[in-house]
Image (cartoon, rainbow, N blue to C red; front, side, top):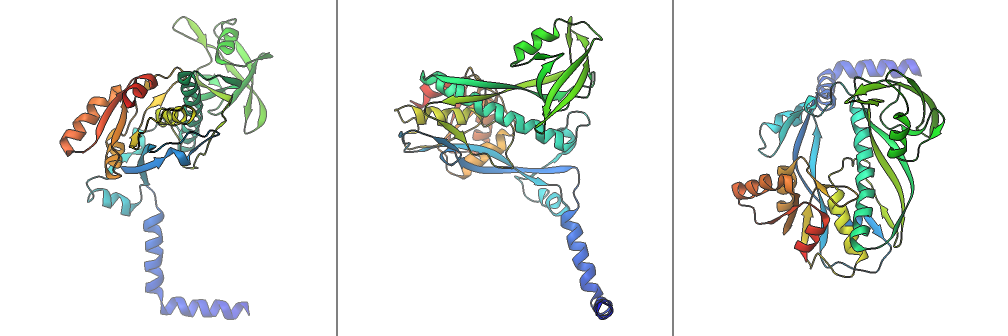
Length: 333
């Protein structure tokens, strides 16, 4: 039986070898990836579908996330980027910090996504004057510098240093300050839900000792009304923070900031409500215009770029500069 099948396949391949060669070529054409991404304008993502808030306040309009559409650097996509004006070819090297892997970059961006989302909760509830509780803080590694002498990895949650429990960044900083340069610390981390024993040899930088990493505080927060995020697998980064904070604020307060309008925007936010700059403004603004948004909210640092793009492309959209959540709310009111 097996012999018959093999003979049949051999005969079929001989008769249709041209077809199989074309098929192999097409598969390779669409599967081989080069170290490039193709960026283009994205669409809008209504935050009513992305954030669940246990309240009865309704919006007549909408707050929307804006994003950059990213395509893999396959040969067809690269060729199309030379034909379609709104498609830009970007080298992966422009996004990497030194020689990091794509997995490490994606891991860090997922951390930033969580950090900014829960900072948005704090900023919104603080602005609304509604109490919230921070139940737990995970001090999470976001980057390991070349100078570091450690086996800590991006994504590790620092649990204790030389036996001292760590509950926030301040406790970690205070504990490290007790030691001197070249001291070797035993650092316990949570990695992939497993407790791992790591080490770090302290380095001196700007008259202080450091373990050579950057950190984020990922907070577990309880609120009333309850807030829950619905993340997509392909989401990452911190540029959604401002719009999430505005959506949450609008759902926990009586006044409807949207007033029936389609409002799009972008910008990071910290727990104090301060808005930070972002990248990809031209793609996000173009996507907002394409989807008929009436207002585009952009960080103050990116405002001039957005206005210039509006004038150059004759966009019919109002642009609002954002330095804090408070000023944006006042402008929308």
